[in-house]
Image 1 (cartoon, rainbow, N blue to C red):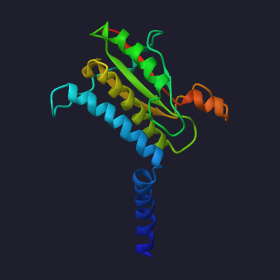
Image 2: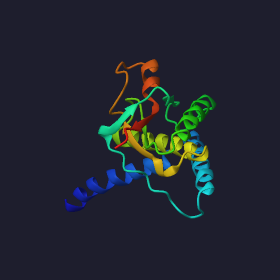
Image 3: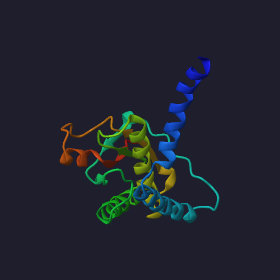
Length: 177
């Protein structure tokens, strides 16, 4: 009886870990590799082997500004499409013209999938944007990331157009202290 109870506790944990690590489609693996390549290139521009910590950005000080456009993602993807890269280049130019500005990239997902999966996907999206900003010359020490998963949808209708609006990364600007 005790072994059966233990099995009920361990089996779901192992299954979740297996799904999280090995359950990726080949597209997810490619997407993660592309995002990692962008982040790696950005890291190489800085000092070799050093990691730049994310800034302390208080949520209450964050706001959306019209100069920092939101980008969308494909289903189950953190890959930056060419259209998104073009928007991020414009965002980066504006951000670089304000070198002391602190930002937070917020990753969001649609309502499908578990809370845990969507939090991880939202973080991959935010990290992909952060890596691209770094590669474009935005100071890494000014960029924080956060994932809201599926917790802050723009649209709540269970349809494809609505889901597409919710798969996004927002660049939020911290008000100066």
